[in-house]
Amino acid sequence: MQLLLQDPTKKLIGENRSKLLSHECELYKFIERIQLKMRNAGLLFDARPQHVELFRQPPQVHTEEGLTEYQKRTNEVHGRIVEPELSIMNRKALVINTGEVQGYGETHVTVAYFKEGISERQLRKY
Image (cartoon, rainbow, N blue to C red):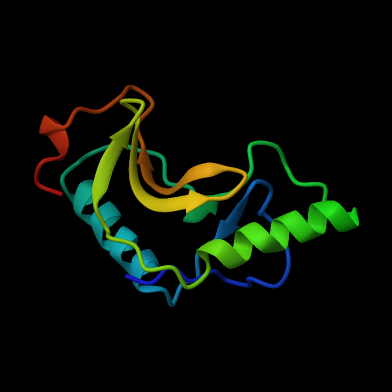
């Protein structure tokens, strides 16, 4: 599935260390279907707007260097083809890995966050 961002050319409201997925993106729609299945099954989880983490600290986009790095990382993920394989991160988050970005490392989109944790067994049907 192709990973498309809402606006790869500028930093939008709500994008601090990440970029929001386009609502027209296949990956975004896939995530919505998974979340609906989990809600219908009675699972309780937090779901933030779907985004790809690209920075550990908010980038300094008011500087030329910060803006250049922000755009470089954005360009690396926008349009990337990813396999929609679900995995559990830190026993609390269901994620889809979205590949490596230079200067950050492995990126992901969080599908659902479980405050109390979740096991592989509980998620087998998704």
